[in-house]
Image 1 (cartoon, helix red, strand yellow):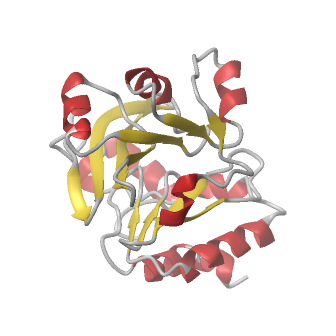
Image 2 (cartoon, helix red, strand yellow; image 1 turned 45 degrees about the vertical axis):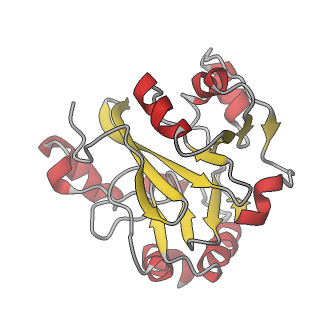
Length: 243
């Protein structure tokens, strides 16, 4: 199944010491979702991998050519499926999980190998990032990261931006209803509902992300924003910020 983001399993540089790796599509509620991992070379030379995608021998070789894998990040309950295979491939790396991941894996009987919880932690790699765990949702607590050196905000599902040419025709009505169609994607409307009653917490966290003043915003699904990152955040969350 093509995703429209080929070539897959190839680190693609987007700024100094940061790459994206587009992976194969996965089925989510019967719909094909493209996958994307972000790789950052930390100031100590180690690699920090966000939302690891399916691991292949070729991808492993390409990643190790960039540097030693030191940190593996599962940023939400929807983005942890491949963490264990990466941990087994790189046992010396520290695997971090967001709140809810451990319980979700246990509920679905999915093997999970990890080392540390993100909640309450002050990792050594924090000197390279601004980061927080977004509050207020009754379903998912997504960890978001801003790589200071490249001014890159790294998200998973807080924003989605699906391109019409890269999706089957039958998905487009659902994409439009969810408000996640490119070029003006944003938070899916069903996810907005999970913050009902806690919009003040979400607003505080979104404002913090905007104050980081990102130049670009990487998304796990769809077209990411290569420029005007803070402006795109303000546009996407206008419904929240203008309340």
